Amino acid sequence: MSDFLIILYPWIKSLHVMAVLSWMAGIFYLPRLYVYHVEQAEKVNGAPEIFFTMEEKLYRFIMHPAMYVTWVCGLLLVITPGIVDWTRVWPWTKGISVIAMTLFHLWLGQQGRRFRAGENTLTGRRYRMMNEVPTLLMVVIVLSVIVKF
Image (cartoon, rainbow, N blue to C red; front, side, top):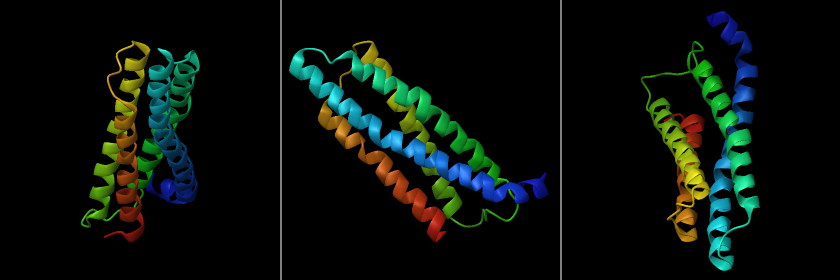
């Protein structure tokens, strides 16, 4: 199995990077959609249905599959011999940050369900602030992987 992973390593890593890019694009954009959703709802006493459609399709058909592919490929990379030195700090900071990113992803999904149920309580300003969370996590992840401290 390990020889097989070593041979496939560049392909798995490439797929991992593409999935991460797709996941992060969605994770940056969905909170922004929520901002527009809240602000439009405040202006016209209810947001147009298009917001629900855009949010749900982004989450279900782009972000969710991209997150799964990111995780599967990432775990395959982790078990590839010689890739991760667990005595260093970087794999742990990356791992914790990826788990936090996943929790943020799930929180976004929960917020979408609250919008659908008419139970959203957060303001546009709060969603703008929450949009900074994935940026901070991305910085930690990228520095962990590139600098390998």
